Image (tube, protein in one colour):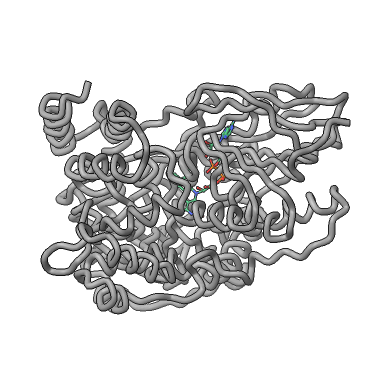
Length: 540
Ligand SMILES: Cc1cc2nc3c(=O)[nH]c(=O)nc-3n(C[C@H](O)[C@H](O)[C@H](O)COP(=O)(O)OP(=O)(O)OC[C@H]3O[C@@H](n4cnc5c(N)ncnc54)[C@H](O)[C@@H]3O)c2cc1C
């Protein structure tokens, strides 16, 4: 038998794959994770970022609702630095919603999801921008979670515990020894080379792409997966400070999530083909449709600027019925039932339940490898999450303004002391006021944060800083910070001038790709940036 380099190979660096890598490495297994783009660049980085209380699923999907309620409690404990228990409201805007309120209350009780009714007047005092005709309100324990850093800290912890994390590495084929899967062929996209990896067991954690790897197998029954596209709009300003859900069965445009300095409105639900998954983008009609629905919750929503829109595909288990009814439960496929050993596929679920999905998968892997070790992920904090570091501490220690400190408290946790020491040692991080230099003005990202990210968080190309720090995610979409970042990248790395220019171009083009569906504001922004970079900066 071919010798295995690893106990386990994981394909897919979304929350699920990174969660499995962390779980297994903490149990002492030797793991390698391959991701074809950057960590969290798939569905995980294209979601609503909602830490579900379970309320949304109580009526039709009780199991998923209970899982969400239990897992969000765990995540708030192990990741206080990237979560925010802002609380949520389910609000009725018409008589049908009001009636659904009774079903909602009963279903919450059955699914063990906490909820409490409150008066619309009391609610409007908390959320004055919401529709003043709201008729009925329930409070729930919804929260926000940073999906990028959640994935990246999971992968980072796996790495600290011996795992290999290989981004921009695409699994192209499975390698067989008779009917056993013993490894994968990998395309290294940054160097355009191929190589092979061998492992005792291979995990397909590629979310909506999961069916692709089945091409190498001859199966009686293929994956019952329904990749379902959903679109989200990022709107400037924190218009609400709690999550606002429409009080009805899950539908389109019925959730608003506060996220850093903006709110995210979504979503829609449309079945897409496997070939479309890498290029999902909404059209103008879909954006207009979402805004019209958003008006029911915040009547002034159209007066605010849309910073960006994006679409992701939910890796849902197909139910055969309406898409909204596809289950949010997860499933693990063991191909030994079809005569193939050494391969498992995990799919379905939610971002909120990624840890539980990873635990169940890791339990099965250990059973198959005849290896005994307990899961630690429900107790052990994620890196940086050992303690909640408040906004005040960031303000005082790092001498940053209120807004920067507000954003920092949802990223770095106990790593603030590392960032502080980088400020102190890196003289040109300091302005004359002894404050760290701000690189991204929209998202308040400072140079020492980027420097710490460069040293620790597995950055390969310039676009990777965005997912780790939010640099370039604000209203100007990187127009004023990418050239400053390019300068730092030249200082921090051995990369050639032409490579940095190439990476700069790729990063900017990703920001500009929304052009076909952009509104007037966004078009102006994109055009100005293009002139500045293409003409002024001689970016070819
Ligand atoms: C619009 C929308 C809104 C959502 N909102 C929420 C929410 O608010 N809260 C919540 O809890 N859940 C939400 N979800 C669900 C949640 O985002 C997903 O369940 C979760 O992120 C799936 O994670 P994953 O790791 O399984 O998949 P992914 O994040 O898609 O990860 C799979 C990874 O595999 C990689 N990959 C694919 N093929 C290969 C290959 N051949 N080789 C190497 N790598 C490969 C991909 O690049 C990708 O990064 C939402 C989903 C959508 C679409």
